Image (cartoon, rainbow, N blue to C red):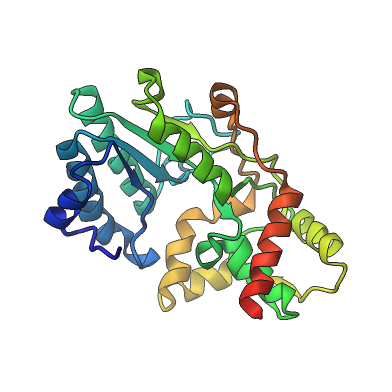
Length: 271
């Protein structure tokens, strides 16, 4: 079913009998988050409250800002840019209603996606691996290929969301959970593993220098928007998912498995 999430009345009617509402949407344009997210988030929050449903929101790590250590659920919320501020505001609004007893809210936080279901929105899968597997040049728009980074498998996101959407344990709500995520690896490590899996040459990966991204930002809106998150790729950016793994007995899918599934999906799209 296609629905304009910003249409509060239509959304409310759709979820009126729901026991759980899962907010896993994103605005169509990455460069318009500050304008487009607030009304969408408000509509979903209101619809969940009116239905008496749990609200499970799929989020990211932007709200933590420029961290210097592995991120846990206790890492302070300290956004350093507008997109992180939007995410922080969304969680604050949901948490306020949770604490007031108006609904049960929980947030699921993931690092950058990797997997067959998120190719169109994945930096590593869609922007890097897809062209490389076709023998083309790919561009890393920011950062370093030797910086350790956590990549979250989209299937592991779904597994945690499904568990929380059915949970009757009150202590599971009113807080955030980090999606079970494999140990961090560098982009160079990923390419080595892809090469081993495919046993065929890849295209060339080029890293755009910071000065290029900065200079083109005013005329290429997407590059300008990426400046807020470039720290995530210039130094270690590590997600600690110990809490969710221990609480729900979920283990992250091994990276080799994730890469094999992602590669298969890319080839399927090329056929």
